Image (cartoon, rainbow, N blue to C red; front, side, top):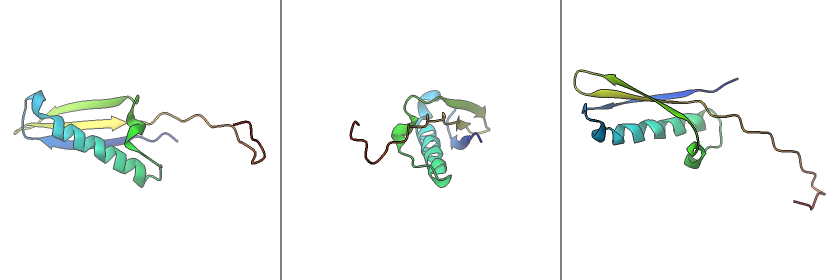
Length: 86
């Protein structure tokens, strides 16, 4: 089953240079959602991942929506407790 996490935060400005806080809060919420879904998650897990950004105009600013579908992690080969080659 594919997991997809989506978070939306509001910015009171229509200027892109003011959207950083809303984007950071939305990304942090994605991390919280991954943890709540049972994933052992550290923020570094987002490095190299594709995050999708959608900016929606509002009366007073914009809504910043960031979504993330984690890539499947390849299964690691099972290691026998007797295996000392690792």
